[in-house]
Length: 271
Ligand code: A2P
Image (cartoon, rainbow, N blue to C red; front, side):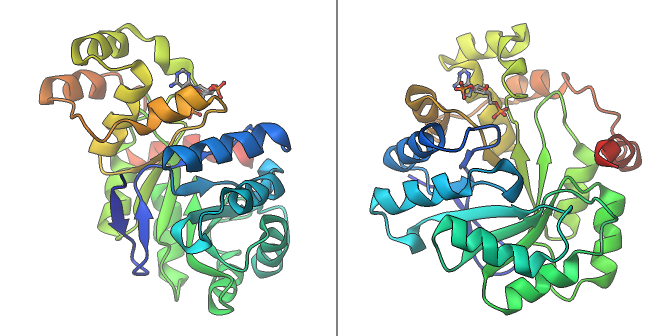
C-alpha cells in the first residue's frame, strides 16, 4: 500500500521510495529496482551522476508495470550546461518519454542559474515536476525570488543525526516537500544504541525505526538497498507508529546546528 502526498504541481508522490545512489550500473541496479517494484514500491530515485539510469529504465520496462503507475525521479548534474538538453538524454537512457520529477542535484554554480533550463524542461513536457536537492534555506529563498515555476521538492540528507529542522520548516513554509535521502545515514546509524533500544521496544528493526521517524516528520523517504529482504523490510513501515517518547529520544540525537544558515554553510562541500 502507498501513502501519497500532493505536490505543488498537483502531482501525487509516494512518501516511500527506493534510492539507487551508489548502486552499480548493470545487474545489481536492475535487480534492486525489480525487487522494489515487486515488493510494491512505486517511487524510484536515480540521477544522471549515478550512472545507472539505463539499468533503472530496463528494470521498469521488464516489470511490466504501466509507466504511469511509477513515480520516476532523476537529477540534473550541475557540471553540465543545460538542464533541458540533459533531461532529454536522461529520458533516452531511462527509456521513457517523461519524468515525474527532475531535480538540480546540488546548487553548484549558485542556486539560480540552472533553473531556467529546468523550467524549459518542464514546459517542453519532459518532466511533470521540477525541484532541487541539497539546497539550504538561503539558497531556496534565492531561487524562489526568480522562479516562474516553484520547486516542488527539496531532497536533502535527513535522519535523527542530521535533523535539519530549520531547513525542513523553510521548505514547508514555501510549499516545497522535503524528501529524505540517506535516512539510515548510509547504514552508519543502524547500530546506534538508542535506535536499537527503540527497535527492540517496538518489535521493529533499526532501519524501520529510522525510516518511520523521517516519515513522521512529514518527509518523503528514499532508503537505498540492493538486498531484496532489506528492500522489503524498509517498505514495511506503514503499519506502525513511533510514540512521542521514541520520537523525542530520536530527535535528541541531532548533531546539526539547528539554524538554516549554519546548515547551508555546511552544505558547501561541492564548491
Ligand atoms: P545494502 O544496499 O547492502 O543493503 P541510506 O539509505 O541511508 O543511504 O543507507 C543505505 C545503506 O544501508 C546501504 O549500505 C544498505 O546496504 C544499508 N541498508 C539498507 N537497508 C538496510 C536494512 N534494512 N538493514 C541493514 N542495512 C540496510
